Image (tube, rainbow, N blue to C red; front, side, top):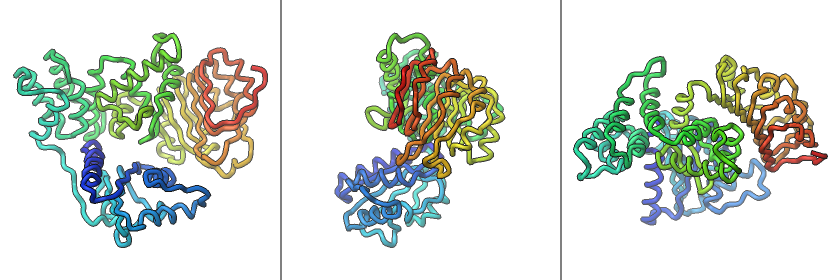
Length: 443
């Protein structure tokens, strides 16, 4: 189950083992539900100062394997493994040929450990009542000199968290510094109120996470949390991208006078979410979401936020039936993306991640007007070509003109050609071209 502290525990174990000099290097990477082999290889290689310069795809795993088996004592932490993962494809040695490299895997599924032939499996249980209470007191800032009323209410709330560390952390953090007993009563009542029409055990956890969302006084932070949930699982999200999408999506209303002002509002909201443990810090300029918090945020949005992998027919069919989508992330090949049929009458933010498609290599692709006819009210269009070795050539800007309400256009790894036509978009505030090719006519 998510949120039991597997990631936190693995990080602490790595720190302890490195400090005790049992390992020369401790390396970690997040695998996720849909493993990105190149990203995993790059994560490991980067921490070991290994370069893949001029390496072919077939040579990358060989080079990584050689580095991991050179006799140095290395602890490799593979976090959040969901299913089958081929160590040979990545370049990770198996236990019978590790030569000093040891592997620590965290997963929600015991079957993963069996398939990977783990030599030892440790099942991380939920916290006991006393462990949960100790953790709750630490995050809520309660001490022995706190009032008996708050201590009693705090213990009841901790018990309602059912031993789930992430629920305890986010709920207790949201109550830290609050001394009005009514706020604590509200949190307890929210946890105890039955909810209907949702999915059993997961909803029990979502409900507990929703308490922190409901207790948040900053509406901008609430809106930012929901926006973050539309990004891909485990994606490290730059603060600047949140600023651009937030402005375009109208998250701040008219409460800003400049980009810098909006940027400050994003940072303030981001920090509130970090303090509440609803966001995690990736580095100084990026954040990420625990996958359980991401799922809970989408659940809170009540189907207004959707993510879909277009090669998954079941996912695609479910999203095509929805009529109230406000934020949408879709992933797939070009032909699948622009033939996707949705009710976009309420769509405000669309993020498209296009995968490598050999059929479109070195060919300029015409995008049909029909795709944009149904999303005329769109405020933000973010298009990413998810292949670092090429720029996708798109004849896209003519149909984009149909979106009279568009505020932000963001492109990555795309060859757009002549962009002078964008001068006709009177509502456009942001044009972000990252590693893209354009021609400048008269705007």
